[in-house]
Image 1: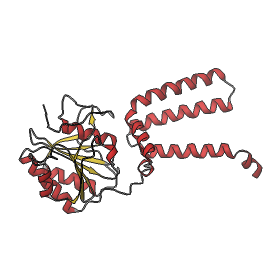
Image 2: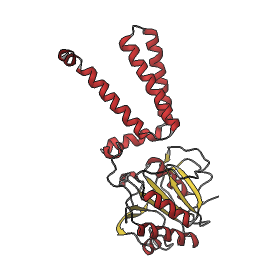
Image 3: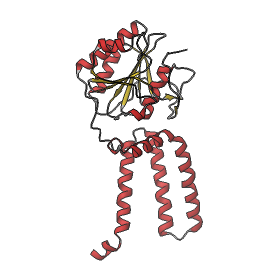
Image 4: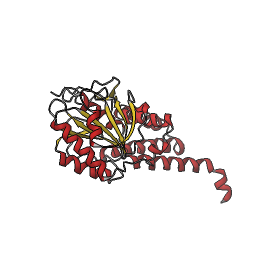
Length: 286
């Protein structure tokens, strides 16, 4: 028995690693349809491996191998945003985010949520455009943005947020990055989303773009043209919302360890691609 284990340890190690990889993939997938696609793809891969290893069926093996190749190409197109995100995480060594070990989750207190909601309400009333990114565990870094902005590192307050988005300040055209109870930077330039280009303004496209790439961040958007409040999460947009609704959503997010998709998503289909252009955050909603 011991000799059998010693002779077959590479095979057993292979099975163990494949099993761990499968568990990791399934744990990261939340959408049911995506989960079904992943199950079907892994079934085909397993079938191809089984036929090649244990069955002397060369024609069947080639057919199944070709089918796996076609499915791989199809999934690479369908999941290009997720695959790009995976390569970014692997390239930057951020494995903690990849396996879901979020050490820096959004642990804001009630005062921070209140200040943010109050500031967003006042900006909405005055029709002053704003874009606020809340990092809830994505571990956002300067290289994740088209321009990382100007470091602030200050405690969140209503007055500071209003001043940063004042029309005569040099940082009002960019986004504000918040982590926990602190403002990290201002004037941040975000990647844009391709979805709803003809429907949304630049601020909303930027909010969709960053939340498509990072599932543990949300964006509060104030339209400069209409004063409408919006909230973006996981590439979906809830708009318009009231200040009280925004307060409820922020409380829900701050008390949860995982980001929940907003309950009223936009009707445009979700896409994972982002424009590699800088934003001019003058909101031109149609």
